[in-house]
Amino acid sequence: MAERVTLKGVKSGIVLRLPEGGDFDALIPAIEDKFKNAAEFFGSKHLILSIEGRQISEAEAGRILMLLAGNTKVKCEGVVIDNPDLEDRFSKLLGPDPGHENELAAMKKERDRMMSTIETLKGAVDPRNCRVIMGNLRSGANIETPGSLMIIGDVKPGASVTAGGCVFVLGALQGTADAGAYGDPDAFIFAMEMDPIQIRISDAMAIAADNTPKQKKGIFAKKEARPPEVALINEGHIIITDLYSDIVKENKFYRKKLEDKAVPGGENG
Image (cartoon, rainbow, N blue to C red; front, side):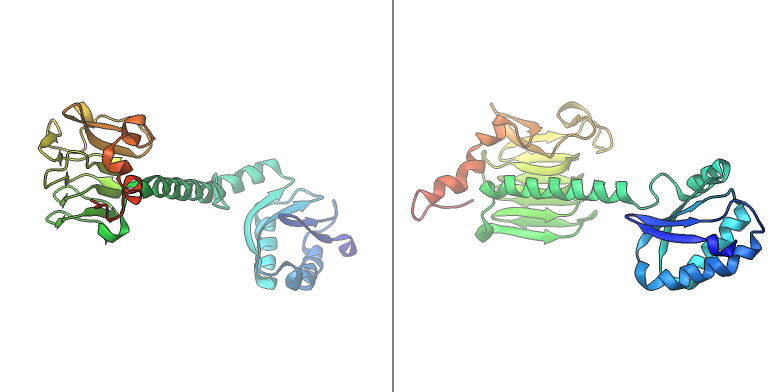
């Protein structure tokens, strides 16, 4: 009977087939030998273990998992067995995403979104005149620069940033931001999450209705899962719009870098 224990590898897992009848304890030596002999072949991969051929109890499944862990370097991400009730219990223990595939896909999507955003912003960023701050700015922080300013992180409530050019927040803008601080009405403020207490562009200013970033009112109102946003002056008033909108594409500061390339000695903001 023990000779009828088989083990094979498939694309994303291991299939252990046991004989339908007989004493389970008598199968243990054969199961252990199968795992030992296949250890080098499977390596340290993350795999699913499928137990087929007979219904087994929770305790028996646990013993098989111990044999797998003790004789191989396989990282077992889940167990599939012929016992529907036990399989359902294992699924609940493992959770909806045992291999973190959904989490990894979401991270890749966010990375792609960030790279697309950075590519879109290249036309407005002059690397020779843009100060870059790495990390979150917390309450009390006050950053000022004569050119443009890029924050790779969040601007928390109570923090403020001031730039003679544009302000780019590759994170959440929850504090105060001032762009075009020395009189440039074509400057703008970009944020992955636009939720400021106050923003100013040149001589125009907008303040959250209750001075609390958690309350999204007026021009600060935004729906969930919206793309990165830009605050800029349009017809004398500050508006917040989608990064990819035509209003942003026509903004003079946004197009400034390309225009300056055509004029030798052009001045970048």
